[in-house]
Length: 247
Image (cartoon, rainbow, N blue to C red; front, side, top):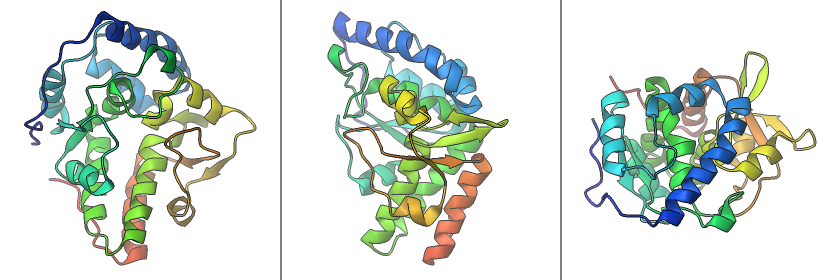
């Protein structure tokens, strides 16, 4: 079982921040109910967050730990460096900020914030299968031999867990937390004219992310098993040890 970061702590927020949180829920939940994958929709109910007040990170961490053995860590209100990020992931610890976007940033924020993390990411981590697969990215990244491999692994994570799409019962659904938490980019990703491609490992590993704007195109997974196989296939392609699922 993971343990919460020692610097993770409760904060008092002004009412404006709670109002922003509530407004984001009101805007995004109807879109998610229409477009999100089953993994998210089941997880958001299990997580049972208060939709009007910002969450208590310690309480959420403890609850998540009972469900799938994950805990929350401190993301220091910034984009963590990839090595630090995947060190957290390897320890079944998901880094979170204590920052909520400003009221004028409801459509899109360039920085990861509380809504992105708690609404976008954490529902999936209530599912043991997804939570176990996500952890595999940690040892895979940490076993990389050079910066090219590290970048490839980070991009596979990015275009699956952050901005991935998923085929589900013949329909295209949203998996990635960056889409689920962004009203603007979710709709952009699903426009008929937005390019979407099959999840080709080598192409994804060569595709730059766009953390400060909308992406030009997106990639489609077929299932969680597909994501699991991608980790193994990348390790085999690059001569890296295949990370093992936890017992």
